[in-house]
Image 1 (tube, rainbow, N blue to C red):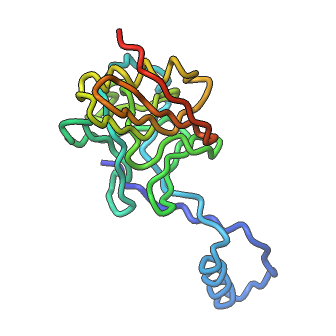
Image 2 (cartoon, helix red, strand yellow; image 1 turned 45 degrees about the vertical axis):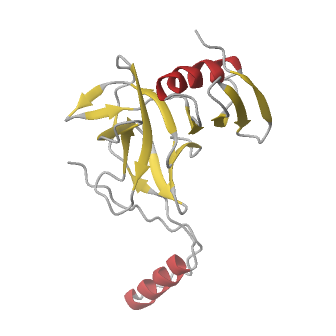
Length: 193
């Protein structure tokens, strides 16, 4: 099992004092002032591709949990451990955020994720972008229809070229309200196959 660690790296000016007591006190003061914490390590892999399948899940996490972040079945709530691409980290601000290798937030706590890349090792699922991840409210739309409608609605509205923050289905006829990451909104009816 992977044990996540907090990698604290302070990048603040130093006065060059070599006295151990002064360094300890100084480092403690800098950490208290919020001068830097790089994030929480996640289990990662260099595997770049694995056969994917449409298993709708939700992202969950807890800084005190050894896995830090995991996925749960959208309906079943069964927990599955996750492995991430090399360079991905987590932070809690205050809720879980997953950052890619460039430091950009790619997932947030409770995001709906439309599929994973399959079991990689030790029962862990691989999540590799681009993955459809957003806040989802199925409303009165039946779950199975909602799972179909979310993907078709996202693609019809520009995903993956335009990032989507939220889709809310308003009725059992797949009327939706979609919010992009930049705050713009559109509405319509989901194109159902």
